[in-house]
Length: 411
Image (tube, rainbow, N blue to C red; front, top):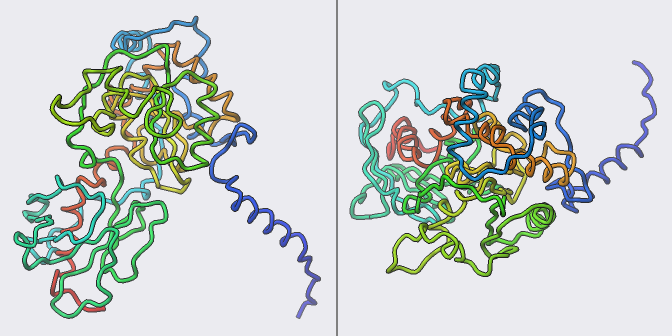
């Protein structure tokens, strides 16, 4: 046996203590002005953090408001053929998103599955429906005990399922799409935002906001470049937003850092966003319409965790704005190529602000951030949408069918 070498415990103990201190102070969450944002050296990240980064700022400043005219300029000077060629080697982690085709239809044990939603906080009522799914299967998703008096599964969100499931009882499904993503410990099927969960549900669907005003403006503001809206004023997110927004013209709606004079001032600025003259206005009803008037939308997650990409980013894409994003390190696995500005790829907030200002005065480079949808270059984004809450009922019913519903084996 070789003699053991003496171990120096001091270095690893000091390193562990330093790492713990960084985590406790929140330094590893989001960068601040005093803490430069780490730069990326990977080829994919470098390509994805800019449209035509090498040309932004090289052309004379040309402030613009007409988005359609910017598209026409880009079509004539760049075009889809060059854009597709540029991103034909685009690589993403396919395993970040679950397959949604469900596999072999012969493995399904039931032609019809009913799911009774028992406890929920944000699961929208407009999800209630009888769905026509793959393989000729139907799926009833309902909050009504009358329509699903003998359900095959009980669906719980924000409520702990029963501790025990007896033979013949419905399967227990539990969902947690928050950053912590914790199982209840008593579920038979777990739904989360991560591909490792039993069923993945991304935030990229439309069922969160079916009744919203989807008017999208073709005119973009020059006097106020960035839209920001938040009503959950988390200290670290607020600080990052305050530091960045202090460097650039912006409108801040919502409760946090509001600079427009009230929660529903968007309707005063954009009366076309009003949904119904007879109902009280709510900021969430005109959010898409309002942000469509801005070239950029600041989107900051409340936690920086792999695969936790929430509606904050997808709202901006749906509204025809360019998201300035801080959040999931693997965000590019969930969005189209060249569709967002990844704030973490800039060495400082000042450099990020300078880039955004230059981009706002460059109609060709700005239009390229919209080329993904105009040229059909989606990356993983199609799969992201396919694995969203919109398709959850059918995908969940397939798993329930494969398990046998009430006849599932007791573990």
